[in-house]
Image (cartoon, rainbow, N blue to C red; front, side):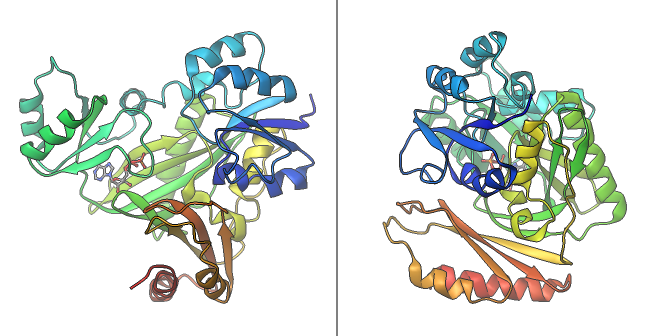
Length: 379
Ligand code: ADP
């Protein structure tokens, strides 16, 4: 079947960044997203204005499209399963999403595959919580099992009083993880095709502040053995899920070189944005290729190194930050992507900038980050 129209659940910046690639491939995109102000709405072929977990809207979307994919995984899987049994084509298929949507289930899944993850347990009223926490020792990491993103729902907790406050304040289901004393955070973007072919992007270093991604450096400064280990992890996960499309895998590396998986996102990912400007094929094009049944293409960097910096909101405002943006695009070899959001809020991702570099030099990278952030953030 030749895929001509793809439905995307979610119309945020991840869908927005697929639009150029879709035009190149001659594919139309229709997004299902709750607000007419969402980034992809103005440039997609059409929009179904509805929440991403509105399965009735997805049923309507499915009638307009050959295949449905996701830029947001906070869907109602049970309701979508009915559509899948009726023949609606989801890529990735829903069985590849279902072990991932609850972070506790995701860790169990990875553990069962024999992959290394932080020690963890689900926070249940009946469980012997105190002794388990004592065993892990503070700090611990408390995570909402569902619907966490950009660090919302993730708390690094240093004592039992704070632990009780966080847990009692909400009726969210939590899991607890050991705090991993990582030296760096890494990520890999991988794609799997309908035929089971897998391609991976160069492993990157990601830098988070207050649990939100601030910067990505490509490639990560790791050994070839570590890169091979991370590639093997990506293959194991995507093959086991029989995934189709792009998946983002976040990892920790410790001082003794141990690699642990933090989490998997069943979609394009912030840690792969550098690929838009720095790689032969962007993660967005690769995703569309995979879900359309096209062959996957070259993931290599076409420059020695690149750095991507997120432009995060730091105030409540309706500004379009045009002066700062002008200064940013004047940086040599810089590519600015502004998502066109009408409202800025602290920590909201408003855009990103990628700078291509002639060499892989830490001092140069630090200096570019410093330049960008001093233009972007006040003070
Ligand atoms: P989200 O899904 O909201 O992005 P994550 O689970 O990826 O949340 O956590 C966000 C950040 O919190 C991570 O990038 C990392 O910096 C920190 N973090 C998460 N889990 C741990 C852990 N077990 N040990 C240490 N830091 C962690």
